[in-house]
Image (cartoon, rainbow, N blue to C red; front, top):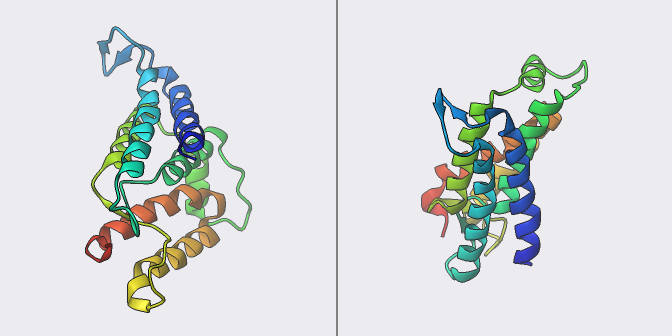
Length: 182
């Protein structure tokens, strides 16, 4: 199972970020480096592998995750990458924010920042909500309910543009409920 996760949620997003970082070449903020910046995109693959190894060995991650899980990381990366590379064709009913985000192309520096942030989130000690229910009590599941309702609202409002926003919301809600995740 972890090998399949590694290919699907580690290698593929790493290759996508490798492609997004190609315009950098070997120059980074005026400094000529002895290697191409695009290889930093493969850090996502490396940190995904490390994250999966940690998850498989850690017995504490029963009802929450430590760090961003690899599927959520992949959704974040591909959501942002797809929106920015394809300039999504949003319908006339889409709000102005959706139109702005859908036609905005981030500079290559943003993809480098996203690679570094994403790699750190994968192995961070932050507790992230897992959709595993240990009881049917409302107070035990409040973070999950907030996450599900908010995620549905974001997708209803922003449609495809909302996909990476749901992952950002997931991180935000997990940070708010850090003390409740046990």
